[in-house]
Length: 437
Image (cartoon, rainbow, N blue to C red; front, top):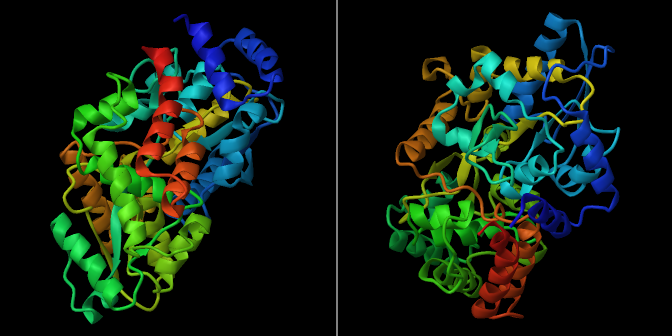
């Protein structure tokens, strides 16, 4: 299928406004991938990290360094993840586009915008600053996209300066009080869950209104999967069997979790923030979620000690490079954007990120003084050493995030059977991915 046909399909799938087509033409005609400057010496920056997160702390310091060294001013606007995700195409097609923004990586997000001509090809800047030399090959996957927006090859459209992965957080005090050990096998893991239920404790902090429940579903699938399954699912190498062992196991097991009381009965109305807080306040002893929570847990968990362990029985886990710094095609000052990106890759900023619970991509472990932070970094490195990063379940299509949320809600509520959920997820996936085969 011709590229234009694919892009048209993608716009429809993402429900991009009709005006976007005209704006895309203008942005394509603008040409060029770097060097443009508005002359007003102001960098407009968007990101959606909290002030207390590792990224928020490191980037706040980077802003100070940037302003001191360049004499330029940073106009920072904090956005929520949902604000950026739901409005990116429209905003980047307007004069309101920032100079630099954090954006979610993957085919359905950064890849989609790149294929629409909304992001700058920053390959010349990558070569000039040597950013590629600082990123391990696995971490480069989500920074490069081909003309159809499929990750892993082609031009550079973003730079990550941190990594991320999903792990199992646990409340050491609650485990000790219940007489439980860290599980090392999947059978031991479910034994732990059953033991908490038997004691009247809901074991898993979960959220069905946003991403966590879909990530748990995907983690269950990964426990039965190999690298080829991931390549098929994420990179479209071969058709995905939506009634195959991996997905069937994930869907049926998630329903079993609900039926056994492993998470709260109102989980379909719970947001990610609420799930995280239920772990922070000691209500739930286990939280399967991302490293992006780690710095906050270090800062806010006051009444107990927490630790982490890999999801038992699985050689792979969700994870990738972190979100990307992307430069909109309609940015007013791209040179300032590149300067800021480069500052965030410096050893001192990378160490700051690492010492506050983040996962730096270019830090020396010797610079990580905090033992809790080092624990997280070493766990991430262990996943990378086993080639265990498997990306995220919502990446394959622009609308898969919303569909996965709604389908898992119906699964848990019992309004759809596992087979019906798999059929509907497969239909959504195939309606988009078939364009690439």
